[in-house]
Amino acid sequence: MVMKRVVTQFGMGTSIRSRNYTEAAARAIRDALWHNALNVADAFGFPREMMIINVEIGVQQPELVDSAALLKIFPYGQPAVSVVKGGLDIPRRDKDGWSVIANAAVMVSFDMELAHD
Image (tube, rainbow, N blue to C red; front, top):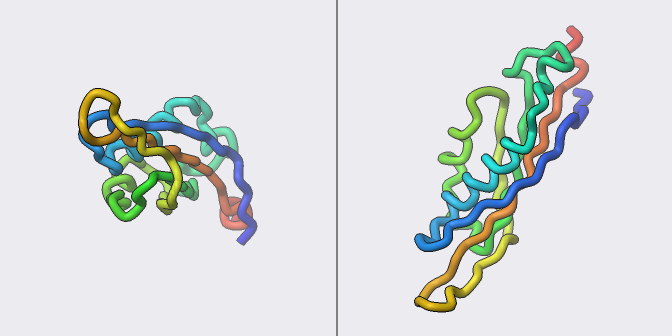
């Protein structure tokens, strides 16, 4: 397997009131994807299903993220999600609780050997 990363994109998402780490993570992924107008599979002449998509999410409470729900964001390709400690929990000034900030790195790669068989 000869993996070649062709795109790395970053995003940020929030859950301001509900403290929903999964929703903040989903928004961070969508933010990263919306910054990317490249049609990388087409640019390399590969089917979209061959895209290997690795996503790393950073939030303060990784155990509260539903990774399976995040996989549903991707309509094609081979996505994998890992959630690590990162992001921020910001105390709310006027009320109890906090706002959640999630960070996402979305990396798209291809197996160059497989793609040319």
